[in-house]
Image (tube, rainbow, N blue to C red; front, top):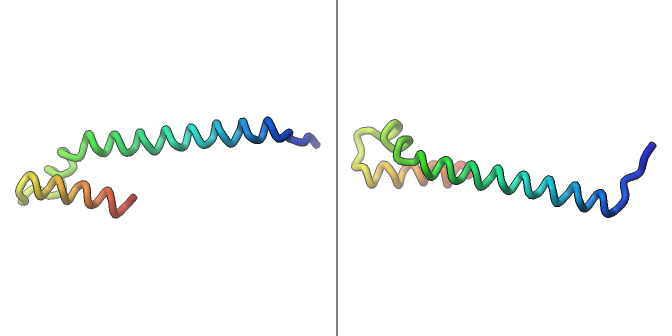
Length: 63
């Protein structure tokens, strides 16, 4: 059985954290870019500004 050194463990933690953070920012960016589409599809009868706020609120609640 192999043991992992402290340096290797730190490297794994940093890489894993970086990948997780990048995915989170990607998700946030994609939703922000498509918020107008989401607003139009999910809240069609509402005022466009209100629909956009509802789309952002939905993302905020789920986040």
